[in-house]
Amino acid sequence: MKRRTLLQLAGAASLPGLADLALAEDKYPSKAITWICPYAAGGNADIRSRQVAKAMSALLGQPIIIDNKAGAGGNIGTEAIARGKPDGYTLGMGNLAPPSVNHALFKKLNFDPFNDITPIMLIEKGPLILMVRNDSPYKTLKDLVAAAKASPGKIIYASGGIGGSHHLSGSLFEHAVGVDMIHAPYKSGSAAATDLMGGQVDFMFEQMYAAMPSIKAGKMRALGITSKTRSTLLPELPTMTEQGFPAVEVLNWQGLVGPKGMPADLVKMLNAVGNKALQDPDLKQKITSQGNDVGGGTPEAFAALIKAEAPRWAKVVRDAKIEPE
Image (cartoon, rainbow, N blue to C red; front, side, top):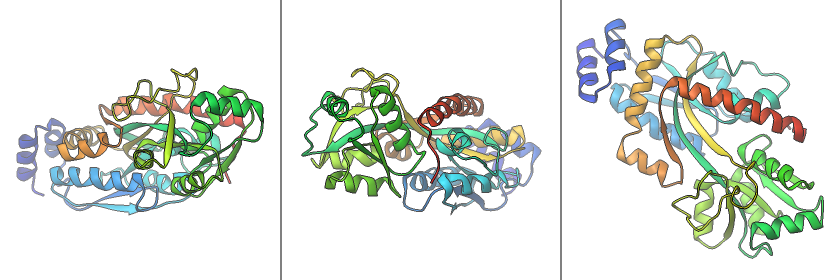
């Protein structure tokens, strides 16, 4: 894209960061951008990556190609982001586990989550729901807690894998109740939910977007939500804090990141483009309809979130003696 066209686009979209970069870098972006998603195609991280990339591509005037590099709890794809050139042509999805949890979970990472990744912009934050199957004997959270205390080591909670938000939320709850429970990790959240519905496990914390269809269909019963306040989508559902478990406040989040060493003006421009993309009504609806909050904000605010989350989850991993498979 020629600088003249880029400046026109910047003016039309009211993106001063884009104009600043155009003055310094005559040719950016002059080709397709690669967006690395550290998770498999079809999952929420992949879907959201494609949605945000589409909106940003329209603003940048260049295609953004999604490259799924799944495995090792998001580490493989995140390492690929970290090893990319800091020229704006390698970007990616960063979420809770790789930058804020995996440093404590894995004995060795091939990247430094605090120094090898450049935070650009928070995309979204969303709570999880503690749910049981609809015919479960546990009608309320109080029922579940009472059963766990009456039979230590008998209640089973499922997750979509060790160290993910499902597991960490369950571990927080187990610690808050003060009774041993059994963790059953699955290969995915959908597999865990299938066994929950089939009665093989007792409960699980599920991300709201995945939980809502089963709850609305009457297949699952929601007992609590991990947000600070109640959700407008389920206003009758009390928070975990309201029910006596303030420690079980969890928000799963995703954001745009890049390799280390990205120039400040490039980060500023991409942040401006990303914030503009999040104002797209269709994209906003896709995020909020799942019970999530639209992100945005500065790179500095996103970096602060990542750093603030890290010690909290390190303590959970340490206290629960969580180890990767």
